[in-house]
Image (cartoon, rainbow, N blue to C red; front, side, top):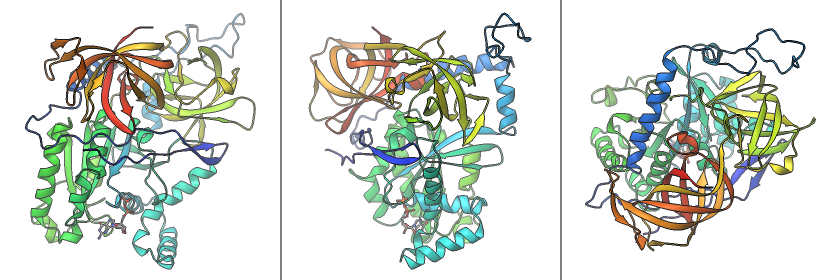
Length: 530
Ligand code: GDP
């Protein structure tokens, strides 16, 4: 069963103009065997344990508030012998981070779901109710959308507005909107916007901490989205394999089914089964009945007795607020994977991307891998504002000098020159094979995808098949790999790629493999060869 593959176009902002870059990104995962008799524990059974190990290590190191030494120069007063511009102050990044966010936690949120499920309407209405869109503007949208014969799209247009704003500024690689909850600052990524706007799912999802999955509760519509070819499963699997563990499911358009509890239960039980198989913990998935169009249960609990008689849970905003904050890898060496490169007005050029680990200050030297060359970060822009520093989790634009723009491609990693990222063409990995029709044999050509990287590669060795939950070797040197199997393989990339062991940096050690338009496997890097 082949799921429908929709090639995605990456929209990029280059010198203020939006351009379509034709690089393909993995979107549709192979249809998972939601109805087989062998329930899968998760996409990457190892994922959870390794990830929790990493998290533990990080949280241990964050227990004691520490001052992070930004430069090797311990001396706070710059001595004339050293260039004073180089001698940076000590910055307590964590304290600064807290101050910057007014004590609120930062959370990157991606909205996923089948086309027409109501993603734009839901988020547009939420932003409106939060006061992020003024009444006059909303009125304008209502008038305009009515005139265009699309009155029901008025709220969806809210996100188009941010789209226009995006186009004006030379900033981010994917569309982003900010809003706040009582305890969090939310970056809403990859606002789905207008129908014509093909969202760059992968870039958005790769940077997300949590996701809202929107499903249409209308009769027949939920089913259409949930079937083979529908995006509900594909998106769910995709975000999970990219590391999203917490999910809010908006069971939307509940007005269409008269807020019926039975319909809600039918949908949540079907989805629950699937999401469990996809590797989500039951306790990390919440279901919220909503109407994006009517605005019920979005920012305040619905007062309507149709709903209150059977639903006592959170409204959508409360659910977003109660997501557990992600661990920020501020204590690790600096890493930023380039999502976009463009020429600046002044000297140098700009790169954009999310800081995966560490932090950066203006004036710092950075190493780009590949090509293994250094440059200076002359400026940092965060949410369109110039800043002196930025840290893990931030989507930034860096202005760089001392390097030729030609050397930098999407997928390069900027890192701390003292603790560089590894670059290789050969590495070993543990993979989970998706629902493929043709077994994988030695020499199999694939496209390797992680973060913003997309690189041709070959599966050069099939080392062993592993037991799904224990990880024990069940067969050495298999002749082929079939669907659903867990295996250890070796990959050879066409050109050098910068990556990390999953155990060290999970963001840069996790990938997907594609073949002829389908995602055939998800994996984690276990050994870097050369
Ligand atoms: P997207 O493709 O997931 O972003 O979906 P849109 O937000 O563009 O919505 C698709 C259509 O569904 C539009 O006509 C919306 O007005 C409609 N819609 C969205 N949410 C609801 C809802 O809660 N109830 C009803 N009745 N219609 C909705």
